[in-house]
Length: 216
Ligand SMILES: C[S@@+](CC[C@H](N)C(=O)[O-])C[C@H]1O[C@@H](n2cnc3c(N)ncnc32)[C@H](O)[C@@H]1O
Image (tube, rainbow, N blue to C red; front, side):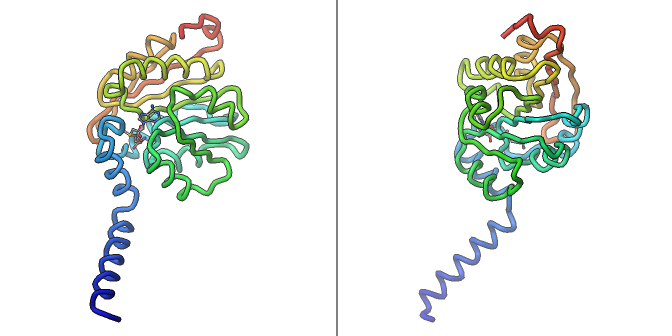
């Protein structure tokens, strides 16, 4: 092998090794560097945040779970572990880098990764054969989204969730919780210290009794 070819093959294998070592964290960091306002954070959520958000839900009859802004899929294996056999997980992200990574990473037949905006959740849910979602979780950085986008997303989310379902958010600032309270009649909140940075949790419930009083 010529010395030029050797140098090039060393560079390639260094790049491949670096990619393997950095794994999802490297993909997430690259996504942040390319779109800092849309990604909103350099570090994925902690295991404490994931369990605190997902544990209070009734998983027994969950048919469709939707996640906005999955990034590199920090929540996805934990959602798939909890989903019953007939349940499905739909993730929606605006970043093609993340969607491409997720499609290559999760081979589960219950998993759907769609490139698009959470604003269009109703048509995306229909496109995979569902009318309603049981639960929607959002990792979106509501406080840095373009004007009006957070409002549109929360209104569409209220419409797409079935009676008895819930909208879950975790965010470093209170923007997501406040928007949830504007659209959902009952909101429960929590706080997780063990996250970088610590975050505010909110569950907006679409209770059966309040479902006709459409606030969206
Ligand atoms: C803070 S990251 C969430 C990371 C991940 N959920 C976690 O907990 O580690 C925010 C994600 O929202 C995505 N995003 C931003 N605006 C969006 C929109 N309108 N619809 C769907 N995804 C969006 C970004 O591409 C990014 O993947």
